Amino acid sequence: MEIEKWDKLSTRYLVREKWATLRVDTVKLQNGPVKDDYYVLEYPEWVNAVAVTEDNKIVLVRQYRHAADIISLEIPGGVVDPGEEPEHAIKREMLEETGYSFKTQELIATVYPNPATSTNKTFTYLLTGGVKTHEQHLDEHEILNVEEYSFEEVKQLLLDNEIAQSLHINGLFYGLLKLGVIK
Image (cartoon, rainbow, N blue to C red):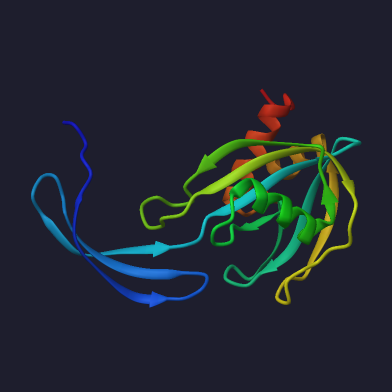
């Protein structure tokens, strides 16, 4: 059977906030049934980076994540502002979160965090030739430490399940594959 898109019959918004919007759609499936309570989260687009310094260290950040109640080791990144291009957003986020600037930048993956329930995409970049050029310029709700790890240390962190954020694990695998660190 050929898979077809569902017909959206109606949409009703339940929450419209800066960081998340929740809507409920009524949809008709290709085989006939109507589902009148399909919940969809609308998030802004996200960017993250596998950021490599001039001396081949990967820049990671450590911060508290309230929803999961964990201290999380992650790759840097954040939200794409309205009207902003992802390639600009990642440069801005890197300077704000880490204070690092990079010589090269390449988009290596575009993924949907959860296409069953969320609308947004995450753009993952490989940045190389990084040097610290600025002090951090964090948002008022951000408290994070910048840390550097060798390629081998990052591989071990992944093997030891020390990185909990799935999109960041995904990004690291894309980055390490692109760099030829893993095959």
